[in-house]
Figure (tube, rainbow, N blue to C red):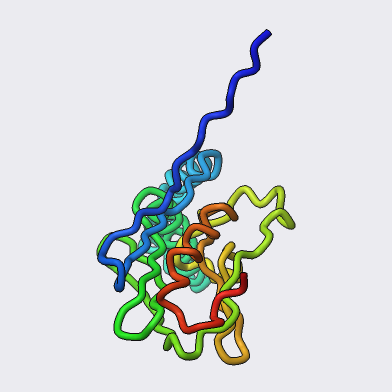
Length: 188
């Protein structure tokens, strides 16, 4: 019986721009079970909100008004998580002496810039410590996480990036960024 060779999987990220100013785009990881669940949940949650608004307009109650505030927060969270998995991406780029890291979602974005002179010890983390983390990278921009397979020290903080990629992809990105960083900024 012949052993079938495993196919090589291409990297999920793309690199645009020139050699001196690359922009790395990492699409959000899709967690299909969570997506299907959230779509059904959001449908029921929407009907519950409509019913609550109807009840509130018929007989105003403080409890119902407060519940609707929490309903709206839950609805926005679930909808943004679904949108993130379909259209969101993490962005890493080098421009004007800064390492810029952020996210994009339907024309909205949030980015932070880190002067290259302050970037220290860029490395790839061992993500095997979380073998059952099915949702890594699928939570969206509202999920404040300290995860990602790439990290670097910035002052007394550790910044993490690449929450939707594997270690091998993280090493590819670090190798691509290494020539643009100050000498000794990348751990080898």
